[in-house]
Image 1 (cartoon, helix red, strand yellow):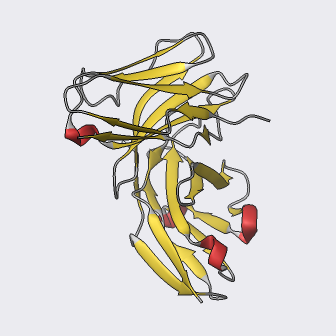
Image 2 (tube, rainbow over the protein chains, first blue to last red):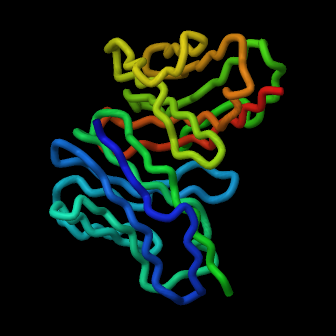
Length: 113
Length: 113
């Protein structure tokens, strides 16, 4: 069975600082991996996805994530946090891309001025 | 273009009542998913429709939950004899052919009193 672990339910960074949100997955096959963002009172929006092409994936708003098979990780980073990045971030995995997503529990990102 | 829409946006119901939640997917999307997001939790998969195939109901938590989809359009999630633990945000998503990115609606916040 697939599973996703997001380390840290809450991460707080200063404006302009590096953002690092951690995600580890378990999968018996090479997975499809996703990061979604949920702003307050809004639906989920796709940030980026890994589908077995380049291991470094670039997404919207300067976010990127690197697929590391040896570490079964797909951590999300952004070089410089903005206040507008404050939101809930979810990592998700799908074993074949055409099955329901398995989500982590989410990480709430706070950005301090 | 229009995204995934859901109605109602908020629903308050008394314990024991039945509720129906509606999802309008993006036109042309053959795959439709229902997820549940309870407070402080990640998203839990409920049910998945793909074209004319039998739906994947493996995520439904009890027989009080059911869902229907008319062709490749509207879906309705029904919860019978609601319980307080059913309180959650119910999210609907659709994808073009069941592969890759899922587009999420804004959700229906269900409160059972």
